[in-house]
Image (cartoon, rainbow, N blue to C red):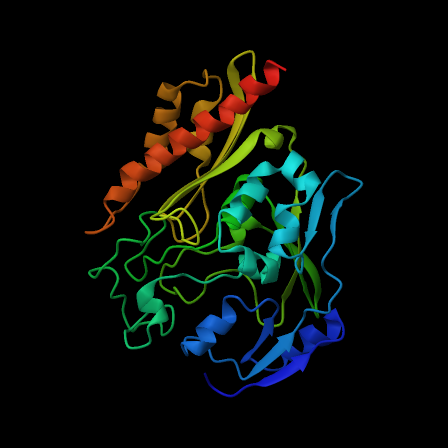
Length: 334
């Protein structure tokens, strides 16, 4: 780890100003990702601006029904919040599927959005990597790529996005709220992340000196019948090989609306709106869920060691939709 300066920010404006004037400065909150990358010399900020004291921890429902989660809210606090568990169980389930209790107690919602890939070539500086040094190459493409992406890839990068929470937020059409010296702006989470293309190092829409202040989740009545399914090599403390965040609105045994977002298989949280639309007007059966899954994976580009992810992702979608639809059956019998 290289030497760096450390400053505790007293307020949001000063935190933003400190990072804006130093292009090699970074915000730090829980540090559960950044500190790891600093130890590996993958990231070497010359200055860290500690934002733990900023008043961005609130979890509240706005007058318009929007749920606002402060960027500094700890993952554990969000996961166990009774209102979130009731109204948006997919959010709670996604958080609890990730990391460990100790990490969830430290990690923040804003930090979760800024997670970087677990690609072993990215995290090992003895290898070239287009995310670390654009134009240097991507050894994962022809290397050991078992954990890598099959959707949203390019000839320059096939690294998988690591977050569980962001998959749930993608399904819910969450909005990322950002503040800078220019003011505030809002970015839909499905536009916030970028596919690699020619610049894999550009992972999201955030600019230097911009600070995530909150995440807004719009009101969605049938989100109470939502869920998150994560398939991984072991039962805990492991990243997804495939995951699905789903929600279904069922009336008179007909699907009126659906939400599906995928994780563990793409370079960003992967919303599959065409598959969602295919379900509308159909009965909630395994056959219709299989059709949606086939459509969701039709553009997959597997590599040598991750071909299994195509079928695994399809089965994950089907199982997640079956599990979600049973919540309607359970509620109708009460």
